[in-house]
Length: 262
Image 1 (cartoon, one colour):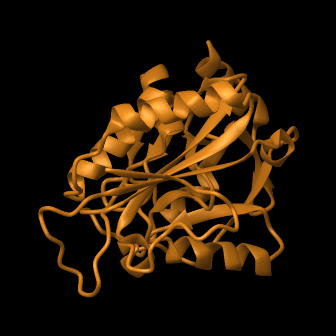
Image 2: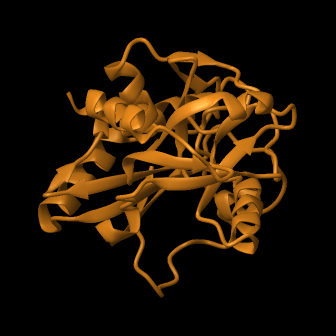
């Protein structure tokens, strides 16, 4: 495995890199706070699972972990993105068995204000849908054109975040996070077996709170949502204040969040 610590404004990545050419890569984004690498066991599992499912070359996870520890030791609060590329090739989708993977390490400042929603977050239902593809479902891969179009819709509508549905009308996630919803007093989270990203904060939450049901939630059920919480590795958990202008029960969502901290 080739490891590159990315330096802003420096040319370090080959033009033949397969992540650049084909989106042939996967990644995870890690929060380092008070010199601690948060949720590292979950990030580690995500990287190894994606590597196996995508048939990538061997991933030197111990070397990655040592690099992360060095960063966390040197910097108290930072965001670290690890992007794993299959390697380099001149042309064509095919890849050889002896290809060497490339690990790119990006760091950026952690600005807590960017991830703070003290009054909760307002969501709208988005029209831009994401495709169903079980082979890639759950993986945070580098083919993110759908998310770019989703962000464009939000920008055009001057909104921060919204509900994302698949092409069959089932709720999958929001533009920036996984989601947990309360319907008929029960907490649910979307089934991600056919599309979407299975986040590390979602995995932590499902391990913490055992009675959350994973099932398909159709767009027609949105009106029945009583409370909701979104989550990812950078924002933690955030209460949803409203969906499509309809106010939700934030006491229920705050109770849910407190249960995650317990």
